[in-house]
Each structure stands twice: as C-alpha cells, then as structure tokens.
Length: 128
Image (cartoon, rainbow, N blue to C red):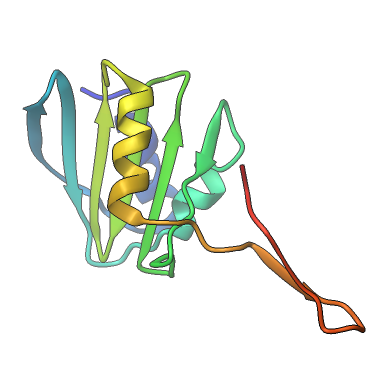
C-alpha cells in the first residue's frame, strides 16, 4: 500500500469525504493506487501536501477545484486529483524522467502572478 493511504483514509474522517480504494496497478517500475470519491476536492490535498515534507504543487493550466497535481521528489511520488479520481504514484524509479514527462504532458506552467508597470511593461512570475 502506498505511503499516503492512511492520510487519504484520514481525510474521510476529517472532511466527511469517503475515498474508495479501487486497486493498485504497476507501470514502468512504479506503483499506482487509484481511489474515487463523489464528494472530494483538490483543496483537501493542498492543505495536506503543499509545502509539507517536500511536497510541491505542480502548476498546470488546468488547475481548478476539481483538478490538481502534486510532486515529491524526495519520496519519489506524485498525486493527481481529477473530478473525484485520485491517483497516487509511488516507487518511481527515475524522478527526473517523471518530471520531464509531466512537463511534456501538462505543457508550460502558468504564471502565478503578472504585473503591469506604469510604462505598460508586463512581467510574469513563475515558480521554479
């Protein structure tokens, strides 16, 4: 079972959101645990993963209340939440390759902030 399984079960206790475990798959040396809920949101994972123990949000142009992606390079894990489907990928053999594939899949990350100076100069700010 993946290292986040207990945390995912705990979310149900804290938020009245039940995540049903659908099973484990293996792909390219990694393990993927699938869950599903009718009542969840990505914000549960923002609260529990973002900036904790090496977790960071992987920004995409699709981020919304129903979609989010997080990555932990040290633990060699990713978490993807999409409209009630939750996939936790772990035991990833090559995190650099995984990160590059994620960048290719999701495309260029959006700017987290944009400023416009008095002269009309637009500056966009990006994470990493």
